[in-house]
Amino acid sequence: MTQLNSSLTVWRKYDEKQTLLRWSAWLAFVALVVYAWQLMNQDTIWYFVTDAPNQISDIGSRMWPPRWSYLEHLWLPLWDTLNIATLGTLLGIVMAFPVAFLAAQNTTPSALFIRPIALFIIAASRSINSLIWALLLVAILGPGLLAGIIAIALRSIGFISKLMYEAIEEVNVTQVSAIRATGASPLQVLDYGVLPQVMPSFIGTSLFRWDINIRESTVLGLVGAGGIGLKLQESMAVLAWPQVTVIFCAILVTVVISEWISAKARHALI
Image 1: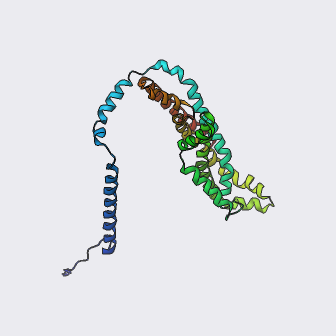
Image 2: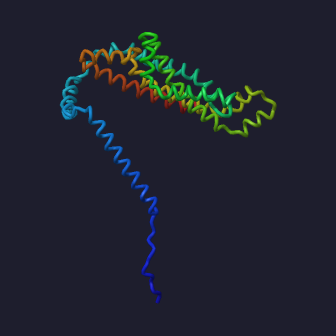
Image 3: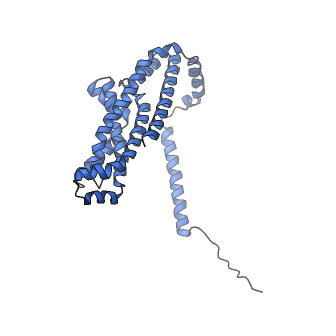
């Protein structure tokens, strides 16, 4: 009969040092949350927070029933919104295409000079929201659709370029080397070796960005860049809540239709 050892070894996932580090990290996280909560509460007027349900009920009652007769005033702004999103996306695609090839390590002509510039353009485009671009462009170009189109384009450059240059860097090197071995020029290598591999990703990314731009272009009118957002601002300024309901419904239907079109186009083209 085997005598069991009284000092059994207990298995632990972490040793004492790792356990101490984990508890220290959790304590630091809790302290950060408490500090952030206190910082948030400094300028918070809790009377308005507790009164929010009453305000929501009051505004909701004013928004119903919708003023469906106002819908006839929204067709042109909706058309302008679609034009802002579509033309802005097309302009962004045109500008993003060369930026992506300049940013990719395997296609850039200069990894020390040109590639950092291209990466900076991508980062700058992605870090600034289209609403901020529109606010800046309205101050420069004046209110109107042109400011909205350019704002959408500038925002789209970073999104499309980043995904495309990552796709360029992941192309099949064997196919590119085979075309280069035939004596093809660098432009021919890009045309026959790289483009066929990245074009499906490029088309899918462009359609997805157009779908996103439909949503973003609906609010550009709030800063004077045209579209249905301008009607939304006008209705909210005069407290015409039944009209606001109709505008919300029109935006919702437009976004749903754009998502359906984008999904069908991706399945058809890719």
